Image (cartoon, rainbow, N blue to C red):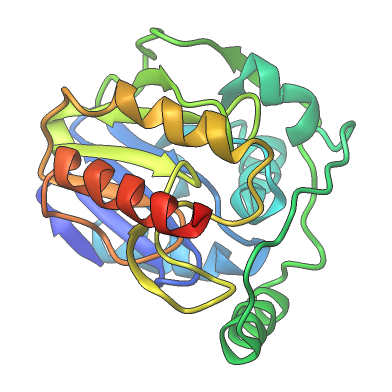
Length: 241
């Protein structure tokens, strides 16, 4: 789905990944689920592109529902994969985590698990090699992605600011559709290692301006970055009561 002249989304509100399209080639932000490979190739074809135009994959963190087809791109097509140094071991499958689930509604959870299974969520391949990045890096990839440390969901969670796409990609730093409850709107994401740290990290986004704030799960948000952060803090305050 085209969101703008340089910006495309694949997947849906359950699991999404993004493509930044420039004359220099394509940057993939997150790699969703393994079975979304066909969504990727179909979207590229609609853009007049192919896998050969992909110059790199940047992961917002190392969880399996963001690794999807990344190793396939790296192994079979020589596409480098970038992840924060604190999540590199996670992306290679060397670190196992057990974050809390939080509130659950059966229907929403079943929809998430069914979609994940249908799209290959049980057969994700971990990365064999990654290129580590850190806060403040500007990557030599189409769109010049800027790395913003956003720890909390995982130690190496990042946001990625791409001015040419007028977008900030936040992975699971926040969500606009809670996959375990179905609740919509900006809110803290589930499966978060350190919820307090994740909430505090959002202050790093408040001063930024972009049309699109793009989570890994949920509807693309175009209501302003500061407003999204305000809404998330309000929801988190309600949850603590």
